[in-house]
Image (cartoon, rainbow, N blue to C red; front, side):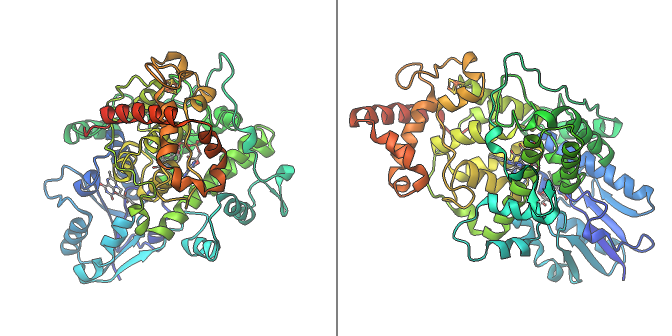
Length: 510
Ligand code: FAD
Ligand code: DLZ
Ligand code: SF4
């Protein structure tokens, strides 16, 4: 049987389940750059350039192997603009008998593809995506009957399953989790590792020009494009990370600093998510570096936990909870997203830094996403749809399966506690403890109320006052509630007034 094999932009893995039985003599691989996918949200320019260039490199590698690839570029005059349109066109132009693909990572697309077989009037085989450590069935079984889903317990199962950092049945070092050692502030004069530069090749430069031309009104700049676009390049980035940044990854995992956009983070998520690297090879590289004595255990464990723990857990939650998950709004948040999420123009230096790196690199590290832009959105009560869309647009590694539970669950607690038992709400004191931002800020972090007070301070208390009823019964919020109880009514009133005035001013539709 001759087969049309559709490969999506985030499925650039030669061992993809729908490519394993490919017959180069008869089958055709279809890859399509389509407006429907590039604009269903207006993705960051670098995200589109990264994906289109990586798709083109992957197609070229398949062709070099002797595979027939039908590649539809975004500016092809016959491009129908949608994935279904391109599959339909290919099926009518070529005499093929069926379609095969690997399940997409977004519920929206999975739902759309469910009736492709009827619409195309041919068999459509959808293979499970096996590029994860934990299958969706396995996650479902793990979750079944549990009162709450705790990442730490899931993570331990994944350690046992993979053998990563294990000595037989026991965790290396006698402990599963070294998170308590991973909260250091950067020492004075700390120099972040100098990361391997990436110079776009001719094909990527062509794509960058195309994106600038076709997506000029999308968010972000293309001036400092530094993504690798093929597997060899991604592997070099992995080596560079393990050698230079992994040793300090644990210690400085939660740190933040002005002008330091990458610190000791791996910068690998975009490659892992599109399939240029596998999650397991990345983890084994960290395990080997630890066993060779090149990196401390808290670094290797912290890094591996993010991947086989958080990443797998987040994906499991997404597919377990969708579609209802996206509709949840546990804290009834409804404010519009402030303009500074797009412009970086705000006197809040921490926020301005997080948005600047996002605009320049389609990247911000985890603590910026969680404790700066995420924390602000949580405290301010930004409507889930608005903040979810922002996160899906602005990061090169963003697909709904991973973006949504991180934002909706971990950052803004709209899921009411599926991902995290309590909201990650923090005042300016936390940001000041973990960064040097406050030194360069117009606001005073030590001032709680009144002119010049750090907005994170009064927004934090306002958030607790607004949501008091919901948090009273939450055991893990009891300390925060006790602190709130120390405030008298007059102070609470002042907090509410200053917070409301501030939010009314900044939360205007852009
Ligand atoms: P590192 O800090 O070096 O971490 C190593 C790897 O662990 C990452 O490459 C990634 O594969 C994995 N990882 C770490 N934390 C998580 C997590 N919470 N969930 C899933 N994987 C994780 N990650 C995405 O891949 N896509 C997203 O769209 C995304 N949106 C996020 C939105 C919010 C509000 C928050 C709080 C987090 C989000 N994350 C997302 C998770 C995390 O912030 C990024 O994976 C990480 O910042 C990517 O940078 P890095 O590769 O340098 O990661
Ligand atoms: C994100 C994205 C973009 C920008 N463009 C395309 C595209 O042109 N063609 C394609 O096949 N996929 C694209 N994608 C990825 C999809 O929108 C979707 O997020 C993932 O395939 C979900 O797994
Ligand atoms: Fe951010 Fe407040 Fe510090 Fe300014 S003072 S950087 S707003 S935490």
